[in-house]
Every structure is written in structure tokens, then in C-alpha cells.
Length: 180
Image 1 (spheres, one colour):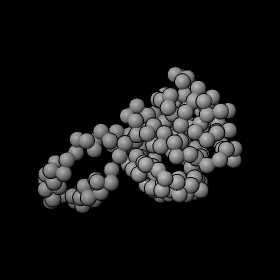
Image 2 (tube, rainbow, N blue to C red):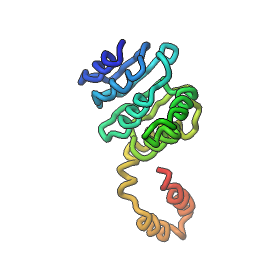
Image 3 (cartoon, rainbow, N blue to C red):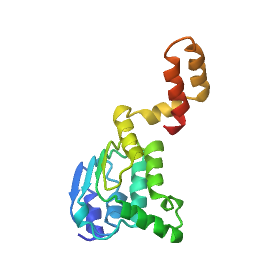
């Protein structure tokens, strides 16, 4: 496939699952540029990827995951330590600060903007990546809750529960709230 041909898959309005074995550089960018918001599962066979993930591919992935209409639940493959190393090495010539630490950029999107991705598999071992996937499974509306919960409200509840044995658990949740 050419990058443009891969992009055509993204224009299929009923596309929910896509398994690709040959993805050219910038193919992922073209696929996600079509905004396939019904896409739930994207599997890319690592052994057949032609070259490392490009900067544009990675930035398109981040932007797609950050979009409020994104429903992608499973993303397998294409992420490897060498891909992230390649992206970070290219950051010197890049204008997008997300490329300086690509793993952190991905984790920030999962923490702050995405509540659909629950299953990732890649050649990158990262406990935080797994954590946000589990958070999205356990509490798919966590981003909506985050908008409504304020520190002042959390303090009021903590004072109310001060005499109760559950206050320690609540304090733990409140103290880690900024990580959500």
C-alpha cells in the first residue's frame, strides 16, 4: 500500500476493526487524517512495518487519541522502544515539543484526553501505559467526572468523612486526583 491508499481505509464510515501488515511511512497519518471515529480496533503487524514510525504518524496518533470523538479501544503494534528513540532523536529538528519525550506525550494524552483506549500492546513496557488502559476500562467516564470534581468539594467531603474509617481511602483518592 501507499500512504494514500492506507488513508482510504479511514474513509470507510462503518470501519470498526483494521488489521494491517504493510504500513508505509506516513500511512498511519493518512489513515487517521480521515478521522475514522468508528474505528475500535487497530492492529499493525510489527514485523512488516516499513521503516520507523514517522513524526507525522506519531503526532497524528496523539491528535486522534485526544479527539473527543475517538472510540479506539485497542491499538496493537507499531510502538517500540526504537520508534520512540527515533522520534526523540528527531526532536531537535522538530517544532512540536511532544516529540521531545514521545512516551510522556502519549501518556499525557491517555491521562488527560482519552478515555476509550483500554488495550495496548507494543514493544514498550510501561506500567503507566497499562495503568491508563485499566483506568479507561474501570471508569470510562473518568474525564467527565474530573471536570466536575473540584478540590474544594473534595475538601468538604474529606471533612465530613473525618470521623469515618473511609476518610483515609478518600484522602488517597483526593491526593492522587491530579494524576487523573
